[in-house]
Length: 350
Ligand code: SAH
Ligand code: SF4
View 1 (cartoon, rainbow, N blue to C red):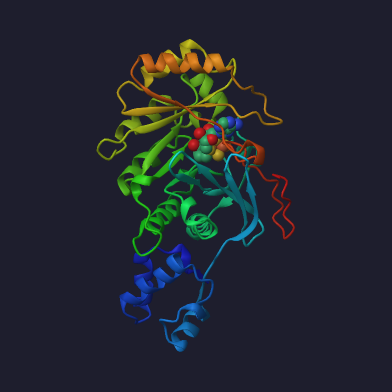
View 2: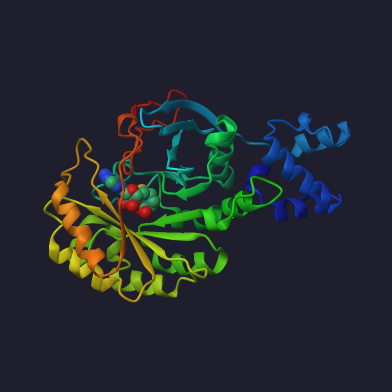
């Protein structure tokens, strides 16, 4: 049965018109789903009892079940949601100085197999439906008081967003619709490990921000850390970045994970500066988050500062990303579950 929360407002209008109803019914329905957050058709008091019954026969309203909420001592919040097939996904609220940012998942697990990432170690289970992607935002909005409402959204949770492209686009349409949660495209960022052709398409279909997980400055190194590099090597990836249609005055964020003794040398910093020369960019340095079972180490504070200085001296904007929510395993690359695909899915992430 069609899951109505996986449809954009336009698609809902189309669906009701096909049933012989006026298009405004579709817009009303969208509002009830995404502004009021209803769970059943009976709640739509604007519709006749007959219409509600008719709709409930053919369609479903899907909502995420909160399996757990963890609050970190630094204000970070991690939610685990249980999907209807028992899989668990996570969303994380990150407090910043004057606003909060919500980080959402696009897949259960991830197929990209990056060597430093726990989500990658889980393997891939399935793509999330638009209702499951946008549903994480609705669930967080409903769970938070006004002063903690997310201003920014980042698609940086579990999964590779551009490997679930169509559902990602529909979720963005849902989240930015003014009849729903009304997020601004400018406040949304999609992070990718580098599926080059989809980067260009993302720029054509949306005006969201782009973050690229680069993490290495030559192909030998990047091939080892991120298997996707064998399909789209650094030159191809950066060519796609140059073709990405950037809104005026915007820049691409390059994420660079610092792994001790692997990619944190002065030569790496110099090469990185050369690689990004012709691209309007800002750089986020992410010191590796130590995780059990992964053969990497966190770099020394001094080498991180050195790395930053080399880039700053070449006029780049460089931020060292502070790790938040480590005590609740909510930091980058720490989202992990041993999925069992059954009712008693193990919450081993806790
Ligand atoms: N799949 C997308 C988005 C999710 S990963 C991507 O790869 O961009 C979000 C970010 O966390 C990426 O930049 C990723 O490289 C980073 N990350 C993964 N494992 C990490 C770890 N152990 N320590 C710090 N950052 C990590
Ligand atoms: Fe997947 Fe991103 Fe983790 Fe790589 S870093 S395995 S693409 S979630």
